Each structure stands twice: as structure tokens, then as C-alpha cells.
Amino acid sequence: MTIKILLAALVAIALAACGQVSVDEPAADAHAAVADNAVAEAEALTGPDAMPRTTSPEGAKVFFISPADGDTVANPVAIDFGIEGMDIVKAGQEAAHSGHHHLIIDAGLPNLGLPIPADEHYVHFGDASTSTELTLEPGTHTLQLLLGDYLHIPHDPPVISATITVVVE
Image 1: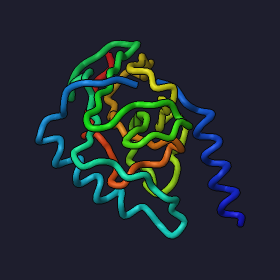
Image 2: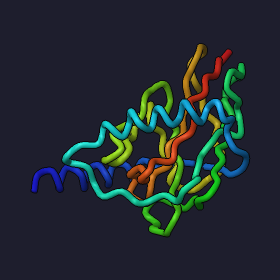
Image 3: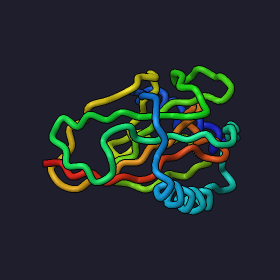
């Protein structure tokens, strides 16, 4: 019973932390192989306390429209997200083959069997917006997208982008 209460609290916190999103072109094939390896590693993070996961359709993917991997950018950093094979909807709105973006900044994939955390490393875009501007400290940063369902839980299989690196001047 305690685990159910804890999970419900995590979902409530995640829903309260929602933010922004977008749509268009695919990531490069080289990045897809890296993303596949990351998925395999993250799948190992699911455990006995895992929550039920929404199924994603075959071929669904998320990716960065901009910036591109290796770009040097200035603050505020404009970021556009893309998706193929699924729809973007607001958090809390349950619909088949849908979800909303979560931006992972300078961190790895979270436990895929639980709601995606909400903090400075895991930014939620639950309002179904299509882009964002972020202020990042000068230096090198990694960015990755992870689609979450209406409860902020990653899909099965997870829909994630390749990790990109940007340099903020």
C-alpha cells in the first residue's frame, strides 16, 4: 500500500511540473544506434515496482529539429522537438499513440517503469507546446528527449531520441 501512495505522489508531482513541445524530421541513423543502446540500458532500470506502461507503435520516434548535435548556441537556447508515429497531447489526457515530451539535460535515462522525475535535469512539457527556450550555463551540455504517456511514464518500448551535445557560449 505504501508503494502505491508513493507512486501516486510521484505522478501528482510530475503532472504539476508540466511545461512545453514540437513536430518534424527524423534523427540521423548513426544516432539511432546510440539511442537503441541507451534504451537497452534503461530497460534494465525497470524493477518490481514498475508501473504499467502504455504501448508505443512500431517506428515511433522523437528527435531534435534544432539545435543539431555539436552546435554552438547562445542563451536563451531555442529548442524544437519533433515526433513521428505518435501524437502530442497534454499531460493527463489519455489517448492512443500519444504522449508529451520530457527534455533530459546533462543526465541519463530515468527508471523507465516509473514516472519521469521533474527537476533541473528532467524538464516536463506537459502543456503540449512545440518549442522552448532555456537558459543554460556556459559550457558543454547533453540533451535527450523522452516521450511520456498521460501519467509521465515512458512508453513500452520507450520513445527516446539520440543524445545530442551543444556548447553554450
